[in-house]
Image (cartoon, rainbow, N blue to C red; front, side):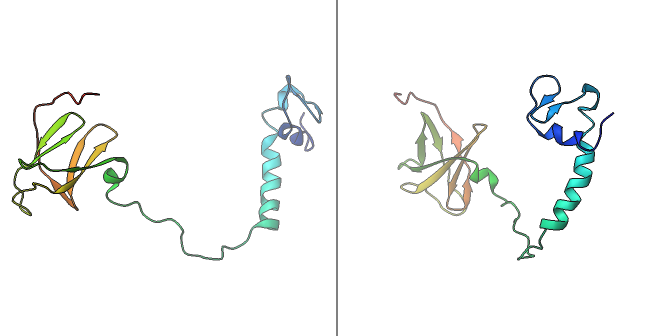
Length: 139
């Protein structure tokens, strides 16, 4: 049968079958002795050491909506005169968009997700594109 003091043994270093630095444990109480210790220890510990938080305002904040633009690889490229962006051996043709007729010479951001999906942004605007023929990048 396991006693109150046997519970302390389980918190010690468990060596060979049921032994610890406090002595030998019977195998039948090895899994049952933790609960009495926690039932007595935690309320006493919380009573002695618990303190009210200085700042009652929550420290966490909601996750931003654009996590797909945060957890990805970022690449900046310049658009060529024919509205094509080249990156990683791939070519992306950018057609005219509502916010701009031609993107020639513009700096765009290429976002590659961890799944390999590509998105192209000009500032905060996501651009439509078509992927062209791939070529060897010489790597």
